[in-house]
Amino acid sequence: MVRKLKEIWADSAKRFVILAFVFGTMFSFGVIPWQTPDEYSHLNMIGQEIKNEKLAPTFVSEMNLEQDAIRRNSEVSVNHALLKQAMFRPAQYSRNDVMAHGITIGCIKHLPAIIGIQAGVLLHLPVYWVMQLGELFALSFYVFVGYWTIQLAPAKKRVFEVVMLVPMGLHQAASLNYDAVLLPMCYLLVAYILHLQCVDAIKWKHCIATVVMLAVIMYIKMPYVLLALLLLALPFEKIELKLRNRKLTISYPVRFRVILIILGIIACGLFFYVFKDSYYVKVLSVCVTNYKQTLHLFHATWNNYRDHVITSMIGTFGWLDTALPVGFPYVVLTVLVFITMTFDKKPETKISTGTRICLLGTGVLMIIFITMSMINHTILITLYGVEDFSIKVDYQKAIYQIAAIGGLQGRYYLPMLLPVLLGVPESIQISEKRYNILYTIFIIWVLFISVNALWNRYIV
Image 1: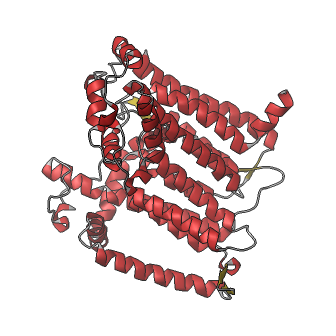
Image 2: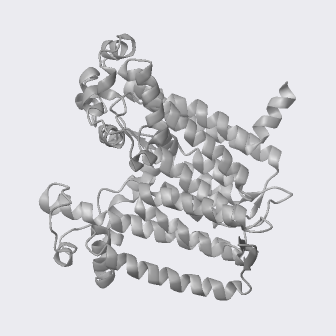
Image 3: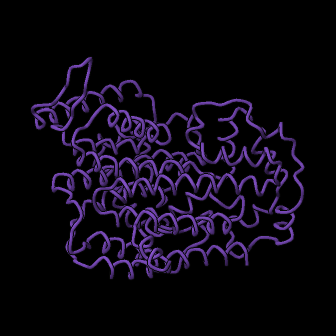
C-alpha cells in the first residue's frame, strides 16, 4: 500500500490532481461568497449566457453576507450567524427564476460553473451550496485539464505542475470566474504544441484540436491568442494531411515558416482594418506611433506597480485585500525559477533552442500586449472617473495625460508565466527522489500558508 502511494506521489500528473483538488477545495470554501473579485459580474454574465438575467439579483437578494462591509476591509470577517444561516436555511428562490431559459455561445466561458450551478438549482439547494457546486465543478475542470496537460507535456513536466499550482491560479480555478476555463486551456495549448513536436506525423485531428483551443482562448480573452505564435515552433516537415486520398506534405519547412509569418502579418493587417474602431486597436496604434511615451509609461508602471503585480500573481486574494506574508511571493517566484532549471540524471525530452526562443518571445510579447491593453482602462478611470467604453477618447492626447498604466493584476500574467519559464534552460542536476522530497515540502508549505491566510481573513 505504502509503495503504491509512493508511486502515485512520484507521478507529476497524479500528484497534481491530489494537491490541486484538496487545496483548491480549501480555497473554494476559504473564500466566502461575494469576496472573489467580480463574482457578481460573472454571475451576471452566466445569467446572460443561459438567457436568465434574474440569476445574479436573485442570488444576492437571498444570501446577504454583509459583503460590502467585508470587501476591501481586512479588519472585518464574516458574520458567523449569517454564514450559518446561508448554509443551512432552506432555499427560498423559485427554480424558474434561476434555471437556464436557453443557451448561448457565451456559455463556453463559464461552462463548468454553469453545470454545477444548474445541478444545485435542480436539487433546490441553498444559494450558498449552489455557488459552491459551481466553484467545485470549475475546479474539477481545471484539475482534469491540468492532469491531461502534464500527461501531454513531453518535457519539463515539473514546470507545468508547479505553475498550475500557483496559489493565485488555484484561487481563480476554484471560483465562478472565466479564468477557471481560460487558464487551463492556455496551459493545455502550450503542452499540446510541445507534444506535436514529438509525434510521427501532424494530421487533421491535431490541426483541428489546436484551432479549437485557440478559438476558445480568443473568445474568452482576445489578447491571449498571441499564444498562436508558438505554432512557429512546430516541425512543419511532419505535417501530413490527407485530402481525397492525396497526402499533402511540406517539403521546405523553413520556407513555409516564412510564408506563415507573411500570412500572419497580412492577417494582422486585416484584423486592424476590420476592428479599427476597437479600443484594442486604437490603443495599440497610438502606442506604436508614440513609442517614446509608451516606453516611459512602461518604465513608470514597473517602478510604481512592480511589487503589486508580482505579489498578486502569486497570491493577493479576494478583492486584493488578503495578501501573503511580505516577501513570500518573491520566495515562491525564485523557487519556480529554480525548479525550471533542474533536471534528473536521465533528462526528459529536450526543448530545442529554437523552441525556447519562440517560448520566451511569445511570453514577452504577451506581457507587453496585456500591459498595453490596460491603457484604455487607465485613461477612462483617470480622465473620466468611470470605465465607460462608449466614451470617445482622443488617445493621441490621452496617452500623455496619464502617469503610469494602472489596474494591472498579477493574475493577468499567469498564462505568460509558463512560456517564459519553459524558455529557461536546465542547468541544475538533482535526482528525481530528492526533487520529489524538496518539492513536496515546498508546495505543501506554500499552499498551507495560502489557505491559512484565507482562513484568518474570512472565517476566524
